[in-house]
Length: 411
Image 1: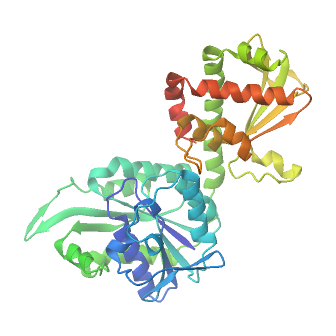
Image 2: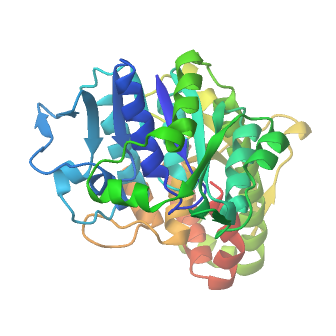
Image 3: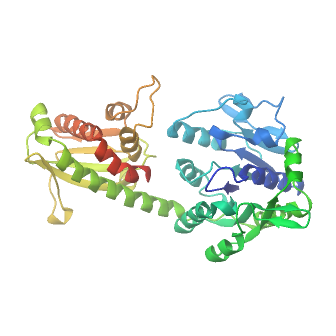
């Protein structure tokens, strides 16, 4: 059963809270593991003494270390203090491996998540679809807008929230209390979103001195929010969240907007007729574009195929334009079909994915790696090369990519 410890922004003390929740659960006799899932900015070694405790790998399976009765997986156990730079798909695969290909014995897994709500958030949601107890959201008063984004996303996706912890809430010096990062917003946020507030943890030199000694376990009044969180975790039950369906609906909405914007941009910016002449592709042929789920297995059965389609569009290439057909107009024969994943579009247009040889991912790579697949009649090869070149030509237009960027980043 999984507990996600999340924040909308880095530097709010999420790892401190994650370590404390896991250690407190261990001290209550609960079989607990801690997954430091912030691979590119792992700092569990700053809080816990990991020296001389390497993690083992046997038969392609990770073995978490035993940290004083608590299981622990941290990339720093493999890489030391060296930074790790990964592409989005590499990160997602390592995240899956750290959960599914790791010999966890723990009944509860506390996941110290990367800051923000990017691709890794989606991966965690899918991996823990049947075992998620909920999220503990950590924030500080200065970052209330980021906390709201995380809370609103959870609500939109019907994702369970265990409660809130406001860290660095205030600074106490003698009798004087100072709101260094602004006044507390925890109670107002809890009331606004209808979620429990586990408590507020101040800035404290005592906490800092503990951390410097690799002894992060909070005690006394500092531990009250942690104990409240553990109480809620112990009583929580896994809920198969509706957020997977919601996530797909949200993705579909973004993909539909992107496809519309791409078609408009192609017709305005790309000389389709010149590419037609290059490949001898006749006008009047119908091309079907299927945007497929990124998790599509290429050997799925035909019965499963439809469930992997996010959205579908049919085009006629005519007079140098892509004319979108309305399926309500009746049935028609499709001459060529293109299956394409959202990641292929995003990577090719944003240029943020590198191949093993250092080259930037392109639509040619997508075709070679099976991220684009083509089917059809005799004209299919012509349609395949034509559409690949159309997409590529569009990607060379910086103004168009700037316009598409918000849609691409939302995928």
